[in-house]
Image: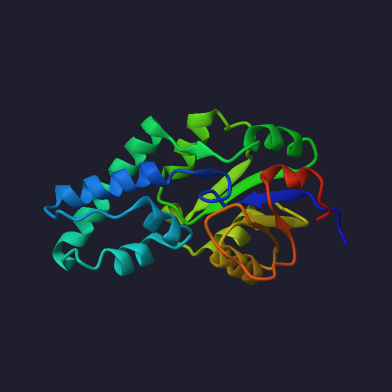
Length: 208
């Protein structure tokens, strides 16, 4: 087998928790289109990892079809502004571990987030030099498995692994033909994963 050369990361629930900022953007957007309805940060964590169009369709069905496009546009702008301003909370030892990992692996991000979200994350923590490339649903409208494949092909990765925290991450990795590591400290729950980490820094000591 070829030597492991790269690690592709999910973002929400794997590298950070921005649910408090994201729920603020959602609720302010809902109010702006005339609804006095609030969702919770737990709801955001529960649907984290889903494609944004699925999230809008399943969790915001109270928004009339004629207002949905406006709602999505307002939310996209508020999310970008709020993430850039308020950011989110890194899981423990993220920065220190990434700086060690980059010594031996090429690092990437693939998320189902909206356009600009990953850039805001990188800018908030000045992580631009740690990650070579990234892709998301908001950029190209592709599902996560296809974006994982895109990153692999675009960067000529020989033996990557994907690190994520939800069953959707696992399924996407499998579809893309990439090995998967379950971040058990995150938002999701996966039964009997082949490889799991209980803390982010475990990536420094496990054999994968």
